[in-house]
Amino acid sequence: MAESEAGKAPRGVRLVITLVGRTNAGKSSLLNAIAGQDVAIVSDFAGTTTDPVAKPYELLPLGPVTFYDTAGLDDTGQLGKLRMAATRKVLWRTDIAVVVADDSGLTDAERGIIADIRRLGIPFLVVFNKSDLAAPPEADLDWCRAENIRFARASAATGQGATAVKEALIALAPAEAVREPMLAGDLFGEGDTVVCVVPIDLAAPKGRLIVPQVQVLREILDGDATAVVVKERELEDALANLRRPPALVVTDSQVILKVSGDVPDDVPLTTFSTLFARFKGDLPILVAGAAAIDGLKDGDTVLMSEACSHHVQADDIGRVKLPRWISQYTGKDLRFEVHAGHDFPDDLERFALVVHCGSCMLGRMEMVRRIRECVRRGVPVTNYGVAISKVQGVLERVLRPVLR
Ligand code: SF4
Image 1: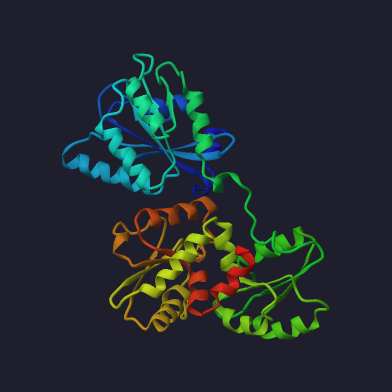
Image 2: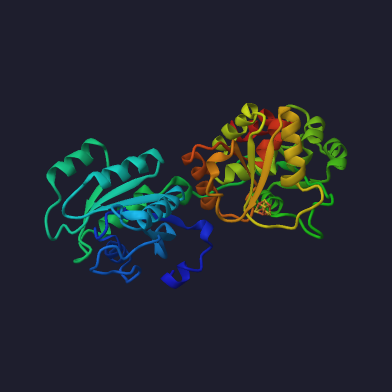
């Protein structure tokens, strides 16, 4: 794919790679050398890059990535503080960081940001740039080896080392960016029957099924199994009519309580949201986040985070039903705030818990990134489906088929 086509790929599926370093360490030039084209503004004057600059690029075999070129770590003054805050914000969403040092090696600035990056759990690489001018200090190389830090020598001016940097980036890519995800296809075999329970209530879109339902049905067909689709009212009859028990029952979370009563305990049962949470590569974190519901206290604020603005129903799940259920379950006086859109609120840390929507409109990497951001900022995160199962007392049961 050409760079221009990479630019058209949905943001959610792009890896975010962020370059950090002191002013004039050559971050922008290195980015150009990696990309093999002028993707960053380059200047001989210190401090050209102020706010992080996003640049889409195709990094084969990973596919589309977004490089962020950030302001200098040694940027000072009030403006410098703002720029550093902007860099930090990008780091929260970063999949791979590149710490760029010049021929003077690793100063307190680089060591400080390396400590931050490590604390945030971001895979990273140190690039000793300008190695055509002078070899990196041997003591710094020894330190990297001792600390088990991946490093490369490069020269943005001559292009030397750009391939090694690219290879290191590919090696550092998180597993979610590489592996083929599966929604439900590994939970049943050829010839099995899978029952899908789809309530058709006021909240259901007119004349169609929603994305998770369609995707599960498609995987059932791809797996040469039989799909039986029913509303919750017809479930008992449908189960009674089957010659042998289904390999799996998948239900909408909102009717899980009724469905778990109708489906015998030895039949694997899960929810579309649980499958989606696993599909996004983050189920264990979302389950751990759901445990934080038990620790909520009077006066705590819970963020209901939605990835898109959709038409709000009278009995909306994120605004009405789930807040009510969580309040009833905990017996606490809680505040709920709904936030829709691409970014989390800047003051995320003031929330005791983030409950994220099913993220059907987000790519897998984007959702993983949002969850990582919560973890990096020390805020427990779960999602609507997992939280519903938790407060309905069926979480252990719906996790059984997917965590076995
Ligand atoms: S689940 Fe999230 S992304 Fe999907 S429609 Fe609802 S708010 Fe939008």
